[in-house]
Image 1: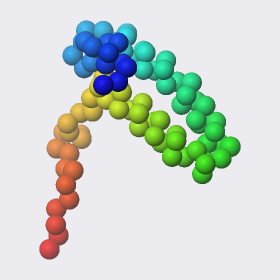
Image 2 (image 1 turned 120 degrees about the vertical axis):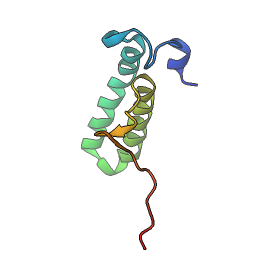
Image 3 (image 1 turned 60 degrees about the vertical axis):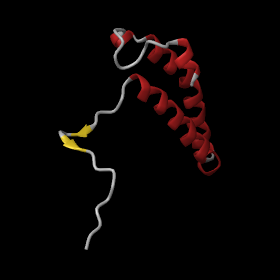
Length: 87
C-alpha cells in the first residue's frame, strides 16, 4: 500500500475528481522534482544513473496506473501478452 493509497483512498479511475484529481496532483507534486533531478543526473552520467532513473520512472508510472489505468486493448484489438509458438 503506497502513501497515496492512504491519503486518497477514494481517488482512482472511478472518482469524480475529473481533471482536478487530488491524488493525481499529489503524485505529480511528489515525483516532479525527483524526476527532473534524475534527468539532470543522467545527462551528466547516463551509465551511473540509468537504473535509478528507470526505477523512479517505473514507480511514478505504477502510481499513475492506479489513477488512470491503461486500456485493455490497443486500437480496438486485444493485447496479446503471450507469444504463440511458431511451428
